[in-house]
Length: 368
Image 1 (cartoon, rainbow, N blue to C red):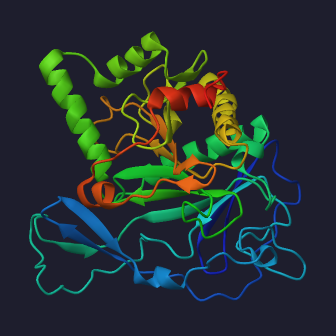
Image 2 (tube, one colour):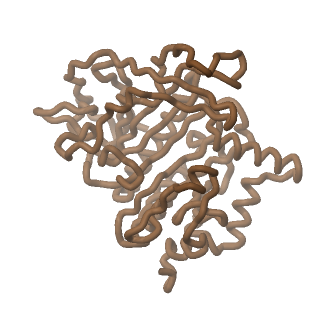
Image 3 (spheres, rainbow, N blue to C red):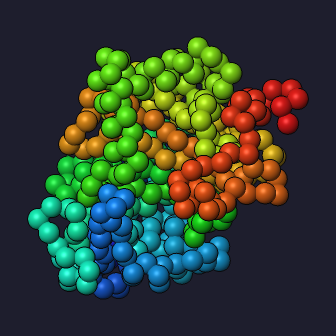
């Protein structure tokens, strides 16, 4: 891994990752004059749902769909300074200027009707955590699927390195790596990038999954992840790609029109635990899956790519790293919106049979 750590003018951390080697002359410093970066957010606990909600009002003023020549993620030039001082870069990771969570968040005032308590039944807390932006390339017009395998390999190393770094922060309990692609998803910056969140709690989705995994083990003595993966591989009907180290498939109970789960064939808790061979293979498999998504309708497919990693300090022995990749597009002119059943009751309705979606992603004749 080739990396160089720097600071932006307001004190935020910036890390460059290079495909080959660090430039001999280093990288330019941030020339901007910026005030100290001190965003603040708060956490409010919903005792009925058992979930934390982040309140981050400063994000209302964040950059929203700027013109290409005003993109804050492009490299800086002689005439324009951006979030990345380098004139060109391979991969760059920096603290978000408009974070949902920040280590500078102070203890919030008491909220009427939500008294602070020793337990978390009714609580308000500082929104401590970390939000980072991961720029995959300096090419504004590229997408992740356009990248060369060597660049994807650098991105994987960056994800792994940042996961390990954030796991060392005392207040962070889970690290979430993800990418949103497409205005249909709600992307506010067109430049190809992803994000990394360091949560001060274990996310509700992860808690539910691990509760089911532990319950299955208690009842059967077996591993739910392993049994689900093996069942998909044995059936084969929803498998998209299988290699020496990875398997990609549409789950039998897919919630989205196009939903792909990508698993390493050997259990690891998180991205840092992947060995070199698995990372090399992942670079190729991930590109393959992304390009299959775009090929389904012959147009860029909006998607969310969400890496499920083990919590930092618990349940690591029962967790299994995996990617959930899903799209809201159900046909060339139609999107899947989360309406009453999904948003109001968490009951998903899928308009495309998972077996048909898998056939379309494989490019089977007649699947369209």
